[in-house]
Image 1 (tube, rainbow, N blue to C red):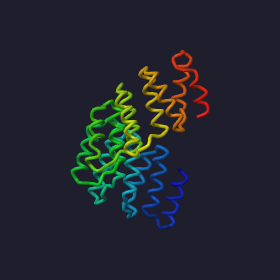
Image 2: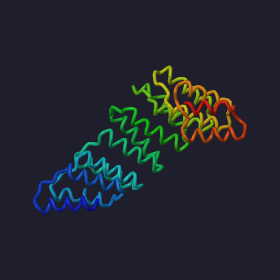
Image 3: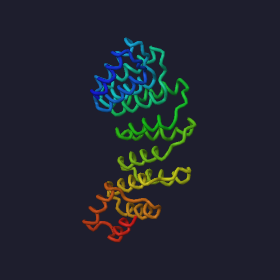
Image 4: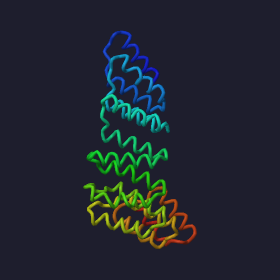
Length: 256
């Protein structure tokens, strides 16, 4: 990255034209290498070069601040872009919402979501998935369930990711009946479960010591053409070593 910066500075010193895209590439590179202060320095230098940061510039730097755990600076930049006349797009909101959730600022994330809904923005399932994921990871399954249940009234349909996150959250909360109900609902709603869905719910059943239910789901997963991932296989092998599941499952899994 330092070499890239040297080339960039050399271009400027030679009077070569640099634009916002050039700065965006440099900012993105610094962010990916977790050098957020250097990325911010490039951003701060843009006005002196008579360059106007665009939405990509702001999104990249906001994302960098969020991933660095510097959420207050991300929020400050979010408001700054609007003050400069640069309207945030759905990608901007998704980045900030995810950053807020990951940094345990769920109440602020929910407040921002309500603000977005109040502005009548056309929110998609990606936005709601971010919040539902944050709520489930925080163990706030009630709020996640309420948000999930209200999606259809907002004209938004859950996708496989939404169901997988909800199933995981329900399993973590010991709500296995409800988790399996969602699995069955997926087929009815023309949103077929994938391998991640089955691995998630199988692990949930095993971790909650519902081995008989897990065995049925394992059989179903194999019949659907999906395989156990490394984490699920580890749990199954542990159960086999304790003679708590049918050994006939192992060859079945090996050939899946």
